[in-house]
Image (cartoon, rainbow, N blue to C red; front, side, top):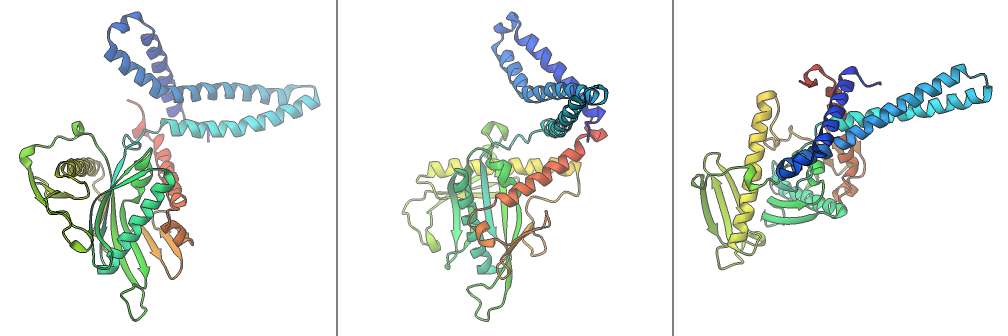
Length: 368
């Protein structure tokens, strides 16, 4: 589909701005203002890719017109054949470049390159839900390993059978948020629990929240709004394994958000980590509040953990994983639990990309 006029107008404007920035950056007078020079250089760099694509696209259209004309007007049959073949090749290339231009015009998610905090909590299903939360934790650990990302556990609460009531961990690596943000929501499992003597299939849930890590300057927290408590860090099954109070619990009084961290070796380190998680939660809370002002019907990132609220189902008897946002079912459950998440995440990213591309040329997206 050819680019609509509204996008061509936007591309012309971006190319004009790029040329203006190049003139400004070449001005000797700008050398006296390093801060402004850096800001303009950053803006120029952000436009360079889309402007280069647009210029290449215009050259391609010119070549395509010439090939079509030659295919129609040349008196040499061999030359007409070659021109038709070239026109077909350029037509395919045109479609590729138009898609690339649409993608380049999409606004970037400012959080995509950030590290993330992932919180997994057992939902409906008692001990089986806690065991499923453990499976999800291992799945993300293995996926991070495949990507070369680092995982740091910040807080966890285990059950007597080795399940996880809750686990909070950081994933550090390029593009962590851009991929893992699609995991937020309620995950459902259907299987025969190890605690079930009759062999009946049970349905349980766990919730996953993925929060981008934010800088201190991005979220202001008044120390007067915090209640800080310390306690002994606990080991597996809840036994106290330290004689000193290194674990930290921070309550943000205005929102009621409670954060605990006990995996670091010192109280200071746990407090720093807890504040990082608190900032991420407050940032996410404000982000969702703003989105709900625009779309009042938007659901919050994680539901209550009820069985009906789900983004994905893991069915063990049928060896299938179904992502309900995609209406996609894969029959490779064990591979997915072993960290092979890319088939699902690639499809989710493609779905989001298609939705945003469909909105790109709408009148509300027109440049002001």
